[in-house]
Image 1 (cartoon, one colour):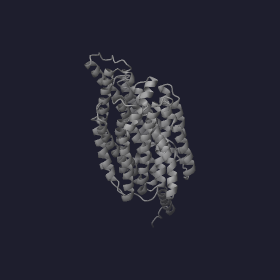
Image 2: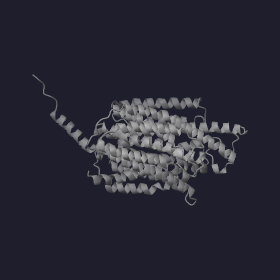
Image 3: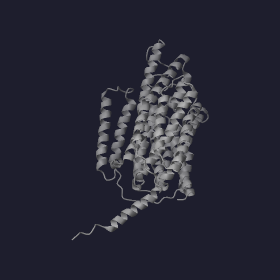
Image 4: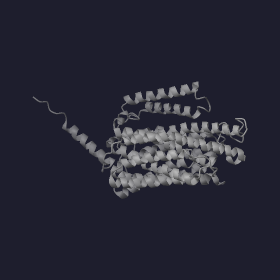
Length: 524
């Protein structure tokens, strides 16, 4: 493909990725209002975020397998259509059950975009040039992440629109992406006989769901040390062990275990999992901190996230350009992991009285680190596998990054709820109020409506959320440090200069030539 054709094809992919990012970020500033309006609690707050991440995580490998059977462009358009359906359901939700279900539907669509966009990129762009386009995708990621909270905040603060438009707003972008993909993306359909491992997929999803339900509800609906904890943890672990057993024996596993024999794939997968835990788990609750602890409006909370997003935008774009020019990539992985760890450690120092200037520096440091690290992990893995395994390698990395984000969000959400409750109890006792007498919509894990609280109670709540959010970043920091360790052991290899489709043709030609030679004639 020519440069012009590649850029035209990328327009549809970028619009699709923008939609997927928007789905996750547009509700971030609106969630406190949504949860309060629907009369739900902290557990529901966590599950509105987690439901999409879990659905996306579970379906990424399935979309990857389906791309071996059907046209990738058709699958991309189908995933966008799923997003449209999920968005409409979410916008018309009147209780949290339907809202969480609609987020699952959105997550299924996002899973297709996450898996297929990077597979298509690797198919048409050589790894040596991929850094440049990954930088552009990083810029789209940054714009979507900036625009999402800002749009969400403005919609919530506009009386005649309201939070439901946070879901409706993505629909025209999804329809535009479908149209652009139809016009610009031309890919050959290479069909082969593939048996999708539905049993393996079920066992993976069921096992992960059991563990996520446990971390979301433990300490809230039942004790950490209880029969429910034993049933969910033992059941989840057994299901995942069975999944490994099935995956090791099926001809077409959802997650091909032999791919982990490749050192680069194994280490980038571990790093992606840890980055997911650290980044998603830590940052998803920042908007709640801005609004509840710092007392900002949804629109202002969106503006306050700009330093982190600008840091990500600049670092991903600049690093991508330099990698394409020089062919050197490991130094940016190591530097990104170091800077991300430092950013998380700095954010563990925040509180209800942290100055925004200092907070901006901390967020910018985190954004710079993430921008240098996240996309380039995929680049390193795609460069070191045969073209026939590009889809599998890309899907595995996306799967484990999303898995890390899902686990991190659930675990840290449960910890946040527990820490807020503890700090609230301490604050109330210090104020001479018996524990549990919070009133004012505070208590029993609910997300408070700060505008209805009297000043003394507001101070207690602000302090509680400030302390609890700082603790989340402190817990996330060791995961980023472990990601750094994994990155250090990745061996740098020269970036290939041919696209995935060209490499696939070469591999097919080599395999055909070997087959044509046939077995060697016997001697004597």
